Image 1 (cartoon, rainbow, N blue to C red):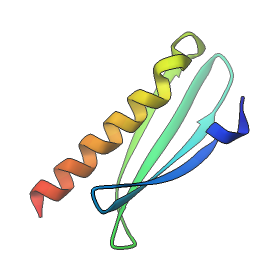
Image 2 (image 1 turned 120 degrees about the horizontal axis):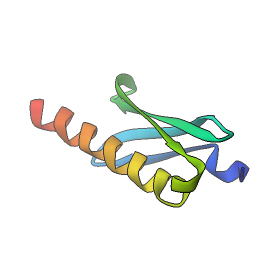
Image 3 (image 1 turned 90 degrees about the horizontal axis):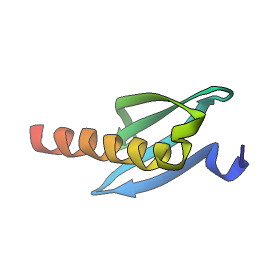
Image 4 (image 1 turned 45 degrees about the vertical axis):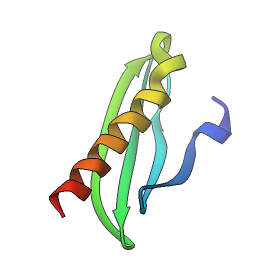
Length: 75
């Protein structure tokens, strides 16, 4: 596994999303934590097979952004 993909942080619409690889092997898993104003606001967790790895992190980012959008819409 490329260590640059193990953990990363980025801003999205004023929120901070941190993604982290939490499992490796035949099945990979990762989580994305969403923080609003420095406070934890929610988490997305995904698992997939190694065969899906090429699209895995794009899907995780997309799900985290959907969560962030929902949080922003809820106020």
